[in-house]
Image (cartoon, rainbow, N blue to C red; front, side, top):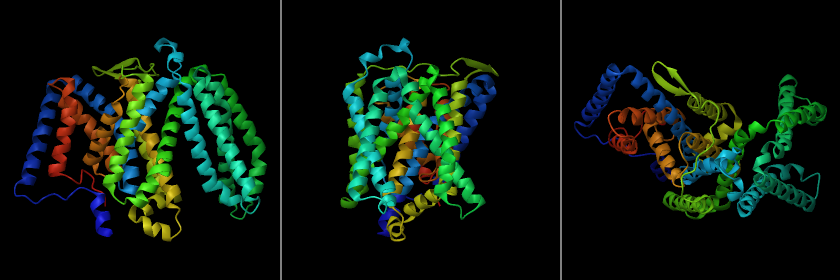
Length: 460
């Protein structure tokens, strides 16, 4: 069992062939020398390529972070994350608020809204049944609890369908949800602060005391949002990421969890996730057709001229999102009990079950978070280039290459590998056509698999 787990965790070690390290060192020296020579020839152009590489690398880093989180927990390659990236980008297009891009009436589809509503209802039903219902079993009968769970889940599904059906009023339909979420967060923070001050404080009493001011705060936030029609585009980012995360969670709980119990083979899981990726790509073609689709301009679309390079504020924002995503995931995994549970499952899932960790819930949340990271990467890409139904497959491959370059299964390697891949792509096409960048990426993958299969920052 242990040997199978170790075999699934990584690529083979570097073969000790005479001259291998020398060849690798020579190739690295040649690449660095070429870049230094080109920088000396045209510093402004070098600055432009460097910034472009960082902006593209930010997208790859987000993909690699989500991929690394899932892979280092369950140790199989989930190809759905390519589809999650496409769902994120096309979700924004589906919910866009810029009428200049065409009529939404030609795109908005009742079956699509119902399907996503059903997915959200299923996710809420499972979440309430797994996490909330056990805490209330002593206070209510099972029939009452099941009825309450069903009512709440159906209500959330209907609410999701309504939000998707009226994208032109997104700030209005989402204001109640934002208000409730703000109030819930305020109550949770109050309970945490009260517990840190006095560990024996009654959590229920604190929640009751904080309920009124939290409700006022939530109502105020919802009111502000309802009067901000310009927020529709950015609200569509959140909706798209959440929907992609719900689909990822539903796939794990409704399909992967049973396949892992019966198949116990990473290859079967890989083939299943490939089928999901291709199926979602086909559905995207059916709904949106195969023509390229643009997204409306977000903030920061006007370029700045810095040192002879044209730099967009939105691309700076993308780099910031990648860094914030890394910081958030690092804090989640290193500073919380959830993160400790994730790392324990990654080390040995069977032992984690023995010590009382609910591995099904933890892994489901991991899939949800990973899918949201991939969706955000797809959104950032969509605002920079036109949407294509097959964009998810290419983004998936780039995220995987970034993981291999940085060190597969290593969180630090994911962020480093993403930026390294972006920079290598951009500097590699300095004297070539832009179409060569994909070939350069796969060439870099071959080099790393040949000489540095454990990546720049190997997992320990």
